Image (cartoon, rainbow, N blue to C red; front, top):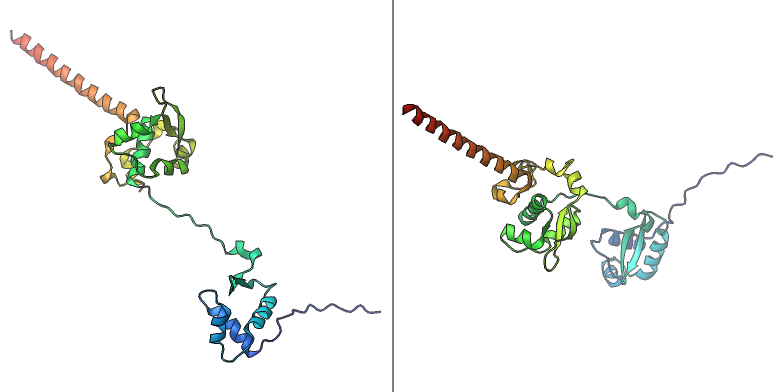
Length: 230
């Protein structure tokens, strides 16, 4: 006995009558969900719109798009189990505000530092959520409390900060010009003195010492010349 071959048959939706096709087209083309009264006002002849909607809903129930009713308004929506295909992750790059950059620079080069100390160095009070933004980025975190009355929280940078700026250690910190070249700050509008003590302070001190020694050498040379004249 021969085995009958199974034939794969695709069951397409049953043929829609003109009224049903019109309702389907009206909902499909609508920019927003429609109620039954609105749909009835657009079809060319009187039909039972509610009955048609339920039939179309059943027809599309197992397809990639479904006809759904929310708050008595109808619209086509992506099937719930396929919604993940429609999502798209996009990284939006936003430059930090001038206040956030100044605050970050102060923390980086003066850490650990308190909120009051940051305000004192900047010369202005904190803006709304300035410090919180840096903490959300996980570039800054609390680093204990300062041993003074009130025990204020001190802040410092994190490993994520080093990783983001491709630094091995804090002594590899970029200069103001390097940050400007990277597009992270507008160096023409940033007070370079905000970029702290630490490495830059040490460099300035070295220059100052060199100038002092240079002056001493000049004084000694002048004294020797005077002695020779005598």
